[in-house]
Image (tube, rainbow, N blue to C red; front, side, top):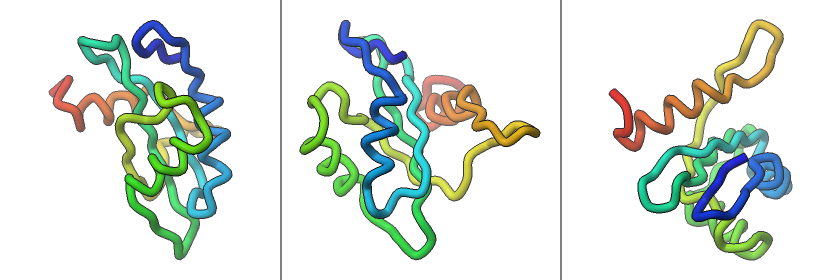
Length: 106
């Protein structure tokens, strides 16, 4: 669960909405700490083969389907996700990567 500005936001709920976008193969959502709101929403998106779209396209897609406070502030397009030996996504590594991207850690 991501707590953004006092609102509870479930990563699973956001992931389920973006899965329906025609360009998206897979998505993982994490929360990153920020001073003002507590956490911000950071979405990692993997495209289907042969598809591309922009960050604005993804955000516009969200805006028509979810409350404004649930729209990811940050979107990053990736080729693949870090996986465990059993094939599960390592969300803690995604969160570390997001924090590095935002210069929150070294």
